[in-house]
View 1 (cartoon, rainbow, N blue to C red):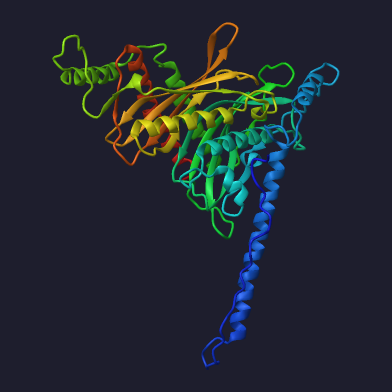
View 2 (cartoon, rainbow, N blue to C red):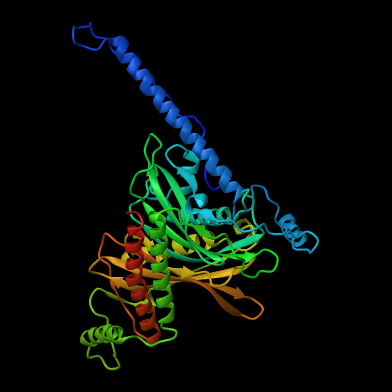
Length: 461
């Protein structure tokens, strides 16, 4: 199944009728009115035709630089093809690197929910809105297409490199997605290192005339890493040529986000204890539980009003990874993992707030390890942080591969989803030291996420 639908020209042309009044001295005649309406209708048809051409061109590029197997691709045949390509006799030599502009990597895709009822049916949720998990899959696919397009040679042909999604820096939903609206997804490279690149994607609603609205509904940042197709080692990618001051500003803002991520990684709770402010936060939570403590014998701590113990917010699911969820590298597609994690977090958020939660953002995370086809995955979600005064909360979802013979698990990802609720949000309270570290990590993600969102907004100005 193709990821984005190319809309066929099946819109009904409504007949335009006019009632001609007797001509007066300073009035427009019925003939002039009909001519004006005919010109307007012709203009609309021309704009719609151009929009269909853009749909077709975007689909052609997505097919050329696809991270997913083509429709009807045979799983076993693809495995044999990869084995043959990796043999020494058939390896392709790489063409020289070329300077690429930011605009060279620009790739568009379309989700025309209003025009394509079949596509809408695949994405619609029970509330009549759009399933965000499906959109997360599309974002990852588009990021891969942008990466392969930038890494292509001077003729636009694919280079013998493999791209993997190393990290997602941030995905902000700025306004709700509507099921009766057409959307454009636009991605481009904003920073290039030796073997890595950062890609910015924005999703915008489209007017009836086929033009994108000024303000994006969604903004996302991906980090992609290149590996040599045959050796698996880091592969250098095309350097970036900055054309003007606007592009230099984009790169500078990307560097700021990169430095913020680096600083966060160096001060992680896995390496350093909580700082002074965080110790005060934990102490304040402990005091609240002591104040709510009853006089019952053996009762060491009690929940304050409108609170929930963090360890009581756990919800999990298990799935088997089938070949239909693979990418072109015969590993489980990262977007598939994001979708399942999001759907579990939504279910957990619904139980936590006893209402419908609204997705706000996906915080930065890394794809620590690839997931093989056939793996049994366990997703575990917990509400790790909440801000009742803002009616927001954060859910962490861990992904573990279950090893049946050894009866062990291996962590591959930890996702952090931020939600809001129209109703009261309970205060989540840690009880053990481990839960306290989860709480502080969620708090840190919420704070750093606001900074990244601010920098992403600056990129639009």
